[in-house]
Image (cartoon, rainbow, N blue to C red; front, side, top):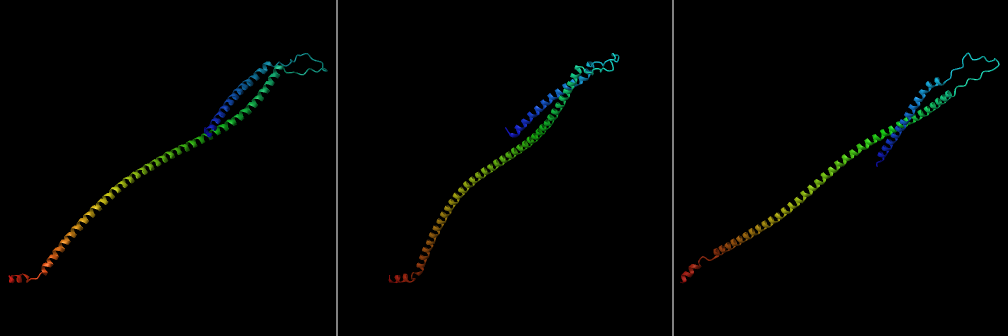
Length: 214
């Protein structure tokens, strides 16, 4: 589990604990308020009336005994004092819990903000990853196309090279045949020229001499 998620869950648990404790304090405080409100109404009914004025006159030298409150009044006063002390204690605890609750709420707000920031960063990274993956796939496809084009070009170059070699061979054969033909014609022309030259060099009177002898 991610650290921020653990902190978030811990903060939620702390908030629940504070709210539960606050509820208990509120309940105790309400009971205390009801109890305190009931005390004044009970005091007059339980107090005894002061001595009447028509009590017998005591001698001047004798002191009258001091007036003592009934036990019920003293008990109510003690309960009121305890209730006020408990109220002060509960009020102090309530203030501490409210401060703790405010701290927990602030932590929750901070964690929510951190969670929102991390979520935004996560989404941004996912988008970048998808864009990067798409870019890499595009480059891979482009490289594959280039390799296919290169292979096709090499095949075409091989075919063209073979055709060029074939054309060179055919051209060379034509040149050889033409040269051979030209050489034969030249030889025939030379032979013809040599024969004509011999005929021109033959003596002109040789036929007449032979005719006279016969």
